[in-house]
Length: 133
Image 1 (tube, rainbow, N blue to C red):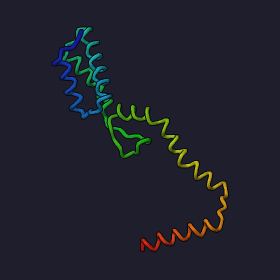
Image 2: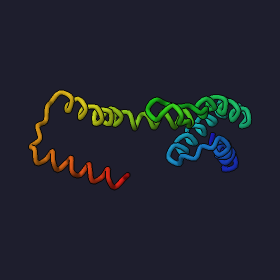
Image 3: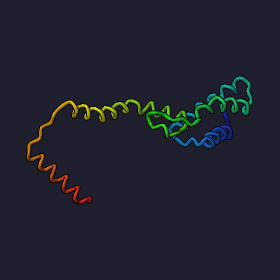
Image 4: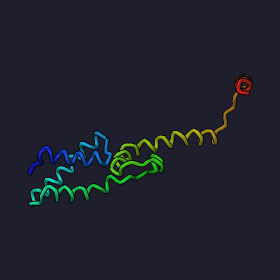
C-alpha cells in the first residue's frame, strides 16, 4: 500500500524536526521510513500507528553521538557519524602513517648536511628571528 503525498510530507516534516539536513542521507532515510510504514499498512495498521512505530524504531538513529575519528567534541546524528566513519576510516590510517612515518624515518637515520647548507640554514633562521623580535 503506497503512502499519499501528505503522508510522505509528514515523514519529511519529522526529518526536518530532527534537523536531519544531509540531502544524500535524507532521501535514503526517507525511503526506508516510508517502506517501513508501508509494511505496517499492509498488516492493517492505521497510518498514525505505523508512523509512530516507525518513529520509535528510527529515533535511536537520530541521537547525537561522537566518534574518535572526528574528535570527541564533534556531535552529530548517529546515522551520519556511522556513514562518515564508513567513508573516512580507510583514509584515517593513511593520515596517521603520513604523520608518524617521517618521524620514525628521521629518528632512525642520520642526515649529514654540508657546511654550506648548515651556514645557509643558520643564517636564514637568524634573519627570521631578527625580523620577529
